[in-house]
Amino acid sequence: MARTARRGPKGSWRPNLFVVLAALILVALLFSALVIFSVHGEELRHPNAAEHHLRERLRHLFARQSYMSGGGTVSAVEDGGAASAAQKADVAGPGGGGQESAGIQDPAEGTAAAAAAAVATATAASKGLRGGPAAAPPPAPAPASAGEGAQASGSSAVTWKKHTQQSCQGYADGDDVQRPLEESKAACRRNDACVGIECPHGATDGCTLRAVANLVPYALADCYELIEVSPDGKVLTARVHPAYNSLLREYPFQQVTTQSGNQVNIILVRSQVNAHQHRLYQKYKDAILFLGISSMNDYPLPQAGEEFDYLSMFPGFLHMMREPEKHFPPHVKTLLMSQSDFSLPIVPARDYSKPKKYDFTYSASDCDVASDGRGWCGWSKNWSFVKQALPVMCGEFKLTGVLVATKDKANRLAYSIPEVCKGRMIQTTYLARQSDYFNYLKQSRFAFLPQIHDASPRVSTQALAHDVPILMNYHILGGWKYVNNMTGEFFHDMSDFRQALQKLLKNSEIPHRYEPRRWVFENYGSDRSGERLLEFVKKHFSDRVKLPKGTKRLLI
Image 1 (cartoon, rainbow, N blue to C red):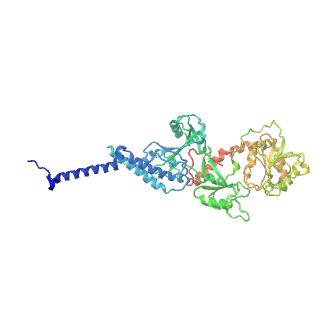
Image 2: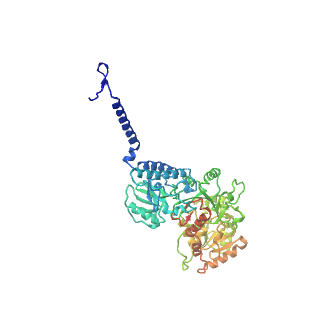
Image 3: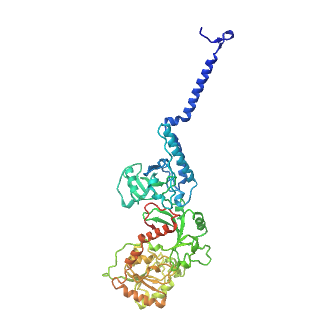
C-alpha cells in the first residue's frame, strides 16, 4: 500500500521528511550555481576578461610613469621575439616619456613590473578556463647596462601614442612618401630618424614619417608618437621633463636639440642667474642636466659682489678659456665650445676678381649711443679702443669702413668719431635684418673685433664663413681660437696695432693667402660642433641623459 502524506488535525497537510530534505538540497545546489556563475560568468562569457581587467590596472600604472599623457591613446605592437603580456597590452599613457627618461626612477616602475607579471598569470589562467594549455610565465629579463635598453628591440615593445589634432614636425630623413598608417609604422621602425607619424586628422591614409615629436597644435592632423617600452614596464623613449619648456622662458636657460629638432633633456645656462632662477635650477637640477656655456661677457668668471660660484655650480661647462684647468674645479667636465661654433651662414667663396667696396666692418651695440659708449654696450664692444684706433685707420691708412649699430634706432644720435674719419665711415642703426649686416660684411676686406669682454663673438665666425679674414684683439675672452695663419691676425694693443693691420691688408689681397671660409667649415659649424657636443655628453653624462632615437648631433 502506497504511503501518503499525513494530515494533521482538522485536515491540515504534513510534508514527508525525505521530500523536505530533497527540496532543500536542490535549492542549495541552485544557489551555489548562481553564485559560481555570478563570480565567474564574465570569464565564462569572455575568457580574456581577467586579463583585460589586469591590463586596465596596468594602464593606470603606466600612466603614472608618463611625463605628458597628451590625452592620447597608445596601441602596442609586438617588437619581435618573446614579448611579455604587458608589452602586448594596449597601454595608455607611457607616452611623452616617463621620469625614467629624464634619469629619475619612478616608484611606479616596480608596481608596473608586478602588474606585468600579474597580466601574464591572468593570461595563463584564462587559457586554462578555455581548456588550452597554461602558458609559463616569461623569464625575468637580464639587467641591462646604461644605454642598452633602447637597442634591445628583441625584448621590448613599440607603442604608438595618438595625439589628436597635434602635428609632429619635419620629415624623417626627408622621407615625404604618403603611406597607410600601418605601412607607415613599419617604415618608421626601419628609419632611425623617425620618431612619429603624422596623418590627416581622423584618417589612416596619407600618413608621413616625422623626425620631431615636439607637438604643435594643428586641427588638420593627428600625430602618432613612437614609444618603446621595456619588458618591466619602463618607458625607453627619451622625452624632456614637463617643466623643460617653461624653464626656457627664463633668459639664462637655453635648450639643446638633436639635428632633427627634438628637444633633449639638457639645459644650457648661458649667463648669470637671479635668485628666482637659481631656485629653479636647484629644484630641477637632478631631473634635468644643466650645463654652463660661455655666452655673456666674462661669465662664468667671478665678479665683484656676485652671489653664486658659477665655476663649480654645474657638472659640465662649455667654455672659452685658454687654460680651463686654472679656473674650473676637477669635478666639472669641460669642453672648449661656444655658441658661435654653430649655425654658420652658407655663402659662396670670395671672388677675387671683384674689388671690395669697404676696407673693414665693425659691429657695435646701440644701447650707449646717448652716452657716447660710456655704458655697458661700449664696454662690451671696447668702443674706447676703437676711438684710439680710428685715427690710425682713417688718417694713416686711409681706410673706409662700416660702423654697424653706432647710431640709435631713431637715427638721430650717433657715437662720435674723429674728424679724419668723417666721409670715410658709414655709421648705421641696429640692423634688424641679418642679411643687411652680411651685405656690408661680404664687401669688406676684413672684420675688426677689438673687444675683450666677449665670450662668443658670432660676428667672428660669420665673417670667416663669408671668406672675410678677421683682425682680433688677442685679449678677447672668447673667439681667440678662430685666429690662425689661415684666418687673420691678432693685435695686443696700440703698440702692435699698426703692424698687424698692415700685415692683414697686404695678405688679404693675395688670392687664397687667407682661407677663412675653408678653415671654419672644416672645423666648426653645426655638423662638426654638433658631433663634438654629442660625444662630450655621451662620454660624461650617459647616465643622466637619454638621447632621442636617431641622434647624430646635438645643437644649441
